[in-house]
Image (cartoon, rainbow, N blue to C red; front, side, top):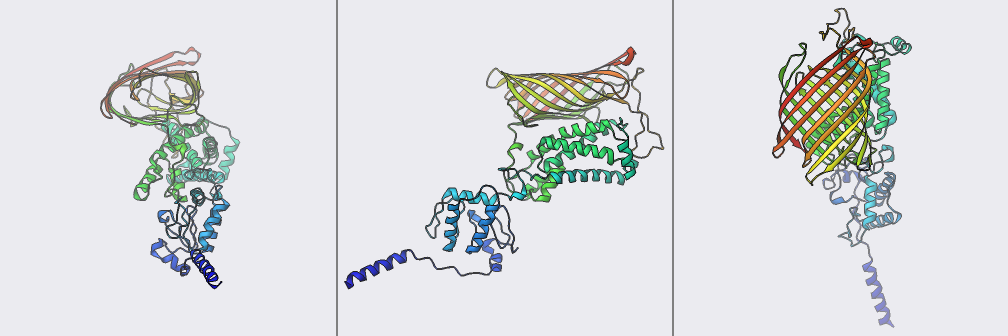
Length: 581
């Protein structure tokens, strides 16, 4: 009996030894943990970051995916915060498993590893992944879209306040420059609200590119505060309207409101998406900082919000909406010769630089995401410093048989010796692509639409006359006219043919027609045509050579059969190209 009892006692003792817990680790005061260099702490007590589970001090991201846990209260508090960090929370079983590790004083593995090397205990990979995801999710108060940690938080009220602040900055800048129109008072506000709209007399560049750029700041303010495209478009109209009534002493200008709103939408979404091409949200250190600064140069409002909120240094995935399906850039530089059939414009030779950006696949693919595909052209030289800017952004597309139907927004600005022209327009078009070989294809586009507002040089019957200087008593910023360009709505038509090889244009032909019915200016109907044929051939790698023929034509039909004016401007180019895709 004694031998049997002794054997059972020995078995129980052996069994108990296999289940015994390891010796508890010596406790440390909280300040010791915060200052211990091997934990990576910086000694900021009671700081909690949403992108990792820590308590008691600020820390860098734990090495090897481990979260330091020194006692059960720390773990329970951290898991409670993880539950509040987002909609994807750890399961109850996962919390039980992690709590069990804390009970025996071990460090739970949150990177999905199968076994703890010290104790032999394990945590399920799925539960660990859920716990880590919950720890890295931003809190609900951050108001980011689900599943998009790189998206800006949605802040509707802040966007309205920031647009008002943008107007305040422009107002302050005008005051510093001494502009009389910036001397606003509640009395000028009341006067502007009582009066109707007018057509202002500002310079062509101010109205056709200055105001659209100001509207771009309103639009990107909305995008920086988490608003979608259409909400940001409404915010742009709000910023433009409040500026016209309350930002200047001038009477509210109808052409400014249209140019600022529609031009601001086109430039705003283009700059917003282009800035995201520059950002690398996976980078850190100095390279990340310079990426953010470069993106801020393109989209100042988003850059400002990102630096203020700390998003400029957060390591997250780039928003999927800001990653295009395809991307290509073509840069051309060379010389052009422009002829003229009027003595008012001399024939001459100029240097030029031109760049085209094709963002996304504008030829195929159904889409309801505005500007997920757009084309941009910027030209410098050719008779003026900044000679052309055009943006064509797709708003909607759907396949119809083998043809793609699209609705697009257009912004256009031309400033050269042939003519000055600007337009805010929409168009519907049909696009068809035919592939001859895996490397060669043909694209045909045809469409037309509405020009909401266009501006073009006035041509009096006696010919082009120089623009006079303003009277000497006019206050700074006050335009007294006369204005030598006309405003009005109209229609537009366009056709494009492309022959492509290896996704590069070998032959391209484009024809455009704009009709403007003048509402303010010399009463007439303008018919503006532009045709261009480009031929390019690759030389080596991205380098190519090309030439083009371009033809500008304008016919002005004056009211009451007063006459007609016709001008032609042929243009030839020779250039080198650099293509990147």
